[in-house]
Image (cartoon, rainbow, N blue to C red; front, side):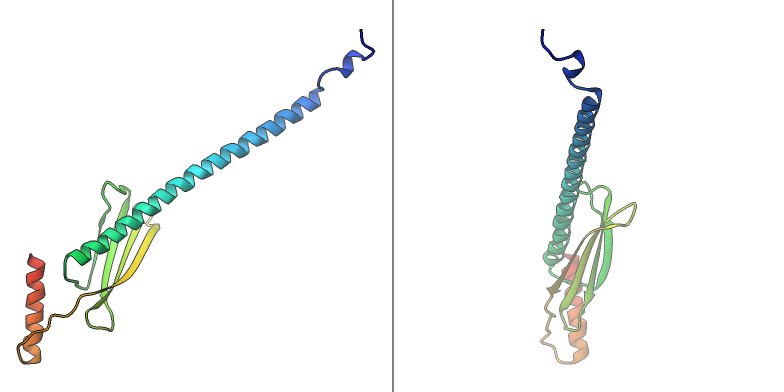
Length: 149
């Protein structure tokens, strides 16, 4: 037998409770960290998809081969099912230069997810006819013909 009494061996109740408390705080911190990481990852994925979608909208404008001052909007489709897009094309002070803005918003709340702004140039169509009115009419009819294609 040893000289130690029975009360001196093992852990006291206070030591065990303190160890459990520290372990609980560690587990809560780890859980919060994982939750935050997953949330940030999802938000980053949505931002990237919205950026690619907005860039695609601008590329569609370039592919149309003409620009018209307009505002358009629509659904983002399967890529972002709960999101909507808005596209605004407006003229600038320079003939043929257009300011283009594409926004991707969360549909229910209207919270803006992403906004892309750029300038696009659509050279004015020059007519060989004489007279200012004939040139303007010809330019309009040529742009209308390009739209119909």
